[in-house]
Image 1 (cartoon, rainbow, N blue to C red):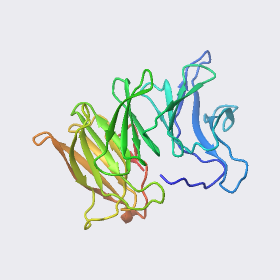
Image 2 (image 1 turned 30 degrees about the vertical axis):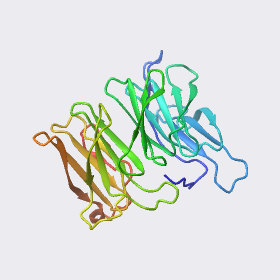
Image 3 (image 1 turned 180 degrees about the vertical axis):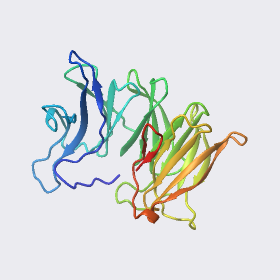
Image 4 (image 1 turned 135 degrees about the horizontal axis):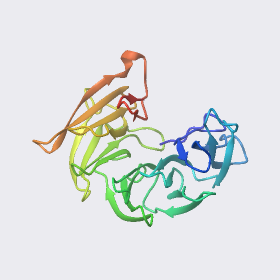
Length: 284
C-alpha cells in the first residue's frame, strides 16, 4: 500500500518473543521497522529489536539495530509457525528479507522475487514448510519453499490488488482480498477471491458489501478464526468501515459472506488489521 510516514520511527509489526535462557524467566522482545521522514535528506531504514518487558531493566531500550537499504520501503514483519524466522516484505523493491531468529546475533538474507511488486502479506502452511506472499502491485501470489526460501509457484490473482491472504488446509482453500491500487489508494476493490489451496485454481469471488457495485469497500485483511468449526474467515473493509465474516458451507463447498459488525455504530473507521486473543475475541 502507499507509503505513509507519520514519524521518524514507524511501527509496522510486533511479535512478542519468549527466549528461554539461563535466567529463570523469559525475555520479552519485539521487532519494529523504522524509517526517516520523507523530507529528511539522509535516508535510513532498519529493524530495531526492543525490550518490551515492563519488569526488565532494559524496558523500552533498543537491544539490536539491523540496517536495511534506505530505498527498500520495508513494510510488514511476519513470523513463521515456530518463530524461527521473520519475513520482511518491501514496497519499493522486489525483495523479501528473511531473518534467522535461531542464531544470536540474528542473520538476515535477501530473497529476490522479480515477479512481486509491492509485497504485502505472508502466511504459512500448518506444517511450516510453505509460505504465501501477496504482491499488490503485480496481481500475484508467490508460493515459496519455507526451508530454502525459494519461489516454487506464481499464481495470478483473479482480481487486482491482492493484499490480505488466509489459508485453510483442512478445506483446501485460500482467500485473497482485492484492496486498492497501491500507488494512490485508488480503484478500491470489493471482493474476496476463493481459490483451491493445493492448485491455486480460482473458484469463486465473494462481494463483501451491501452497497451497489462498485462499492469502494476496499477489503484489506482476511483471517480465519482459530479452530472454528465450521471454518469462519473475518474481513476488514478499510473504506467501508465494517467487519465481514465468511462461514464455510460444507454442503456447497464454498463460503457465505455477510456483514458481521458495522463499525460506524461505535465510532470507528478505516479498519485495517485484525487479530484474535486467547479467548477468541477479535481485536481491531
